[in-house]
Image 1 (cartoon, rainbow, N blue to C red):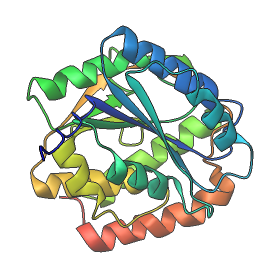
Image 2: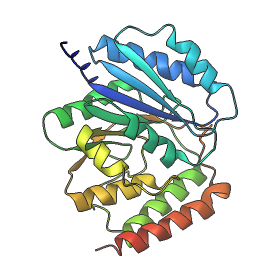
Image 3: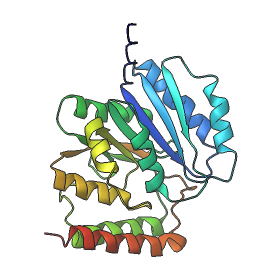
Image 4: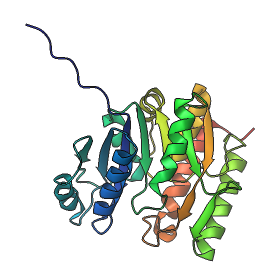
Length: 252
């Protein structure tokens, strides 16, 4: 008996973490599928749920019926809310693509910008490519509220002050990041944090493992329906920041 040839890996696995995104997820899936098909990128879209209580998963399942043949959709349904980091990690570990990325739900960054990240990785410039809202060429189409801008800036200064983050990174928290398969699997299988600061843990782990991170400019629009609520999330963020300080040490 001749063994069947394994299916080729998709060129890209695109993870979209969701929490109660029933009003956004169909557009996310359709727009990503149309863009990737139009650019000849065989793509696996992974919807990584974080304990949603709305109909988002059902909406995603309905959207599957109208996808092009070279676009597949995987739904990872978690019944308990554990955090964005946990959702992204589940997607990373399940992903089959040669390049693996995650992007926030809601179309904050137009899909055209994933080409820049793909090119950086394919050319061997880096193993990890981050979209950045803070490079000179970046454009903010819809700005955050003044309070959010202030808190975000204060957090970035604090994180760089107390943690050994690469000094050339301008935007550690942007939800538009791409990885080689090897980098994604290596880093996320050991990721501990399940909340919003998982990005920082991955960056610090990548630094220790010798992976190269390069940023690229994007256009970005603030989604007023963000799941980050500073009042409710502050304690968790501070708790995770203390964990990172204890694990990775002081900035140097």
